[in-house]
Length: 490
Image (tube, rainbow, N blue to C red; front, side):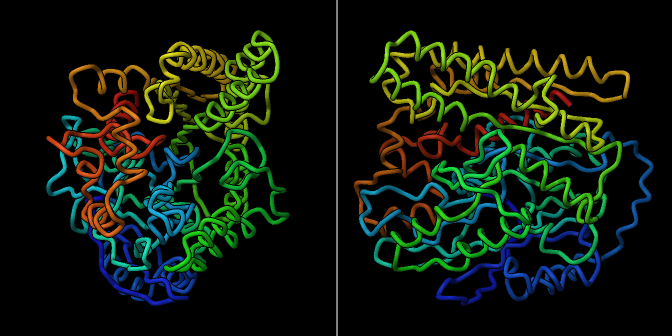
C-alpha cells in the first residue's frame, strides 16, 4: 500500500521469509545506528548497504521557515506503522472460512498498487517509488505471506495509512510544515538503534488494539501486567511473535499473536518519556505531537453495553455506556484535571504543539452491520467528539500562557462527505465479507491480496473504491481523507 522504494532482499530465518522493505533517503544517522538496526532482528540483512546509499549530504542549509521540526504519533491501529508485527499466514487457521488475519498488513489497511490505484483527495501525492533526498521511511521488513496450504510468496505491495500520507505531503505544495530531511519510523526501530535520536526522526508510538488508558493488554483486550522494564519487555514480546511464526501453523500463529503486549495510549507516552531520558529520541519546542485514540475504547464499551442489555434493565446500561463514552474516554485522552491524561502528560514532558483527532462515525464500519439501523451511532460519535473537543479547549485555555497549543481535529464530517450516497464506496457487511470470509479458494484470494487488488476482493462486478479494508479499518482512500483533514488544520 505504499509507493515507496522496496528492495527485495530475502532472508530465511526460523522458516520465515522476510523482505527487506526499508525505504531510505539521506535522513539516517551514523554507521553505528545502521549497524545496530541491521543486527537487531528488526531489519533484514543487506539493510546497511541500502542505508549507506542514503548517507549523502545531510546538512540542512535551507532558509525556509518550517512550522515543525519533527513529529510524534500516539494511538491505535489507525495510526501505527509497524510496532505490531504483521501476520505471516493469510488466514487465522487452516480453514479459509476463519477469515483473513486482521494484521495481515500493517498498517492495517489494504495493500496499494500506486501505479493503478486512485488518489481520492486532490492535492495529495503517494510517497515516491524511488528514494528521494529529503524523505525516509525506516520500516521493519515485511514477512512473506502464506495461504491456508502453507504456500508462501513475497509481498509485492505495502499498505499506507494517514500518518504516511500526512508526513510525506507536509512539505509538498509549499506547505513547509516539517523541516527536511524527514525520517519516519515506528518505535521499535527507534528502540533498536544504538545511536542517539536526531531531530529529523519522527517516531510513531501507536500500536494496534491499544486503548486510551495507562495499562497494557493483549491484542484480544485481555489485561496483562505491563513489563517492569517497559521498553525491553514490549520489544521482546513483539519480536518473539515477529520471528516465531510458522508458515504452516496459522492457529499457532494466532495464539502467538495474542502474546504480544500492547501499551495503551497513556503507556505509549511513558515509552516516549523513557526514550527522552535515554536520548533515543530528540525533540524541541517545534516538535508536533498527534494523538488519535479512543476507537477501541468505544468498541469495547459498546460491546459491554450490549452484554449489559441482555442481563439488566436497559436504562442502567445506557447510563453506564453514556458516562463511559462521553466522560471516561475523553478524560483519559484529554481530561483537563487529569494529570495522567495523554495530553497533560505530554505537556508535562515539554510538548508545545499537540493535535488530537476525533472519531469518524463508527456506525459506518462494516462491523456495525445491521446495528447501525438500531442504535444512533452517528449521534453517539458526535457526543464523544464534542466531549473530547470541550476537554481539549479547556486544556488549551489552561496552558495558553505557557505557549502551549492544543487543537482538536474533526474527521467525522470529512469521512461522512467521502462516503455520502452516490460515491460508490463499499460499506456493507456483505461487501466486506467477500474479503474477510472469501468464498473462493485460498490461493485465489492470496493472489489478489499480493497484487494489491483489494477492490476485486470486495466486489465482483464494476469494482469501485472501498471505504473499509476489513470490518473495522478504513481503506487507504479514507486514510487519505484523514491525512488531508490534518493537513488542513495545521
